[in-house]
Each structure stands twice: as C-alpha cells, then as structure tokens.
Image (cartoon, rainbow, N blue to C red; front, side):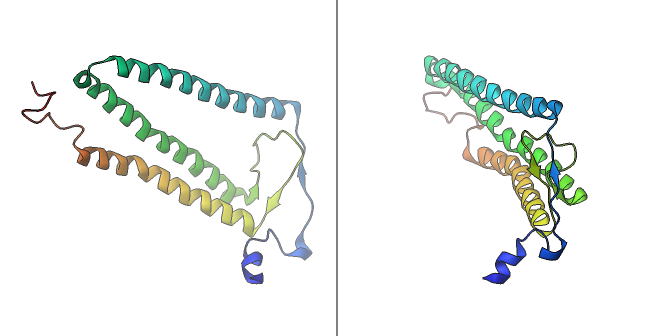
Length: 160
C-alpha cells in the first residue's frame, strides 16, 4: 500500500519547495467570467431544452422524428468538445510539469504542484480525452445501427 501512495506523491520529500500562484485582479476576473459563462450556458441549455421538448410534444408522432434525430446528433457532439478541452489541458500539464499550468486563472492563492502526481493527472486527462473524442464516433455508429435514420417500414404509422 505504501508503494501505491508513493506513486501519487507529488515530489520526493527532500525536493519539496512551497511555491504558490498569487491571484491578480485580472486573473480573478477571468476566473469569474469563465464560471459565469458556464453557469449562463447551463441555464440557457436547460431553458431551451424545456422549450424544445415542449415543442416536440406538440407535434404528431411521425412529424417529430427529424427533430429527434437532430437532437440526438447534437448531444453526440458534446463529448467531442469536452475531449478537446481535456486534451489541451493534459498536454499543457505534461509540457510544463505543473498544476496549474502557467497562464491559468486562479481565484485564490494556490500551491503549485509538480512531479509524478501531475504526470498521472495529465495522463488521466489524456485518457479521458481519448474516450471523449471516440464517443461521438461510437454514438454515431450506435444511432446508425438503431434504425432511427432508416426509412419507415411499410405498414407502420409513419409510412408514406
């Protein structure tokens, strides 16, 4: 068990130095703006999603299929953008061998972490980015195989 903990330890105890990133007013502003934009985007997505699904419920069953297809395709693309973000962050962590990477906005005084723990976190982020980048292709394949994009079967309610 001690070897497992040592694997995630930041640095050897003799080499540890306490380095900190001090927030600047500009850094705090950038941090707050990023979180504000994320919160506003989430609220907007929730509000628009509620309106979108209310619109879909108002359509006849056969007329809502193209809209459902578009909705599924839109949600398949989201992990791609998350994967791009994780890929960039993981690469920066590996290049600079520290967390937080230089130029990243901080809100409070934060200790700079270096060493093995940062490399493991970076590898974890790169692994998650690979999964997130592969998810849209896998989801597209599953949607294609599900038959939702095929023509309606003769004799069904939606057949022409």
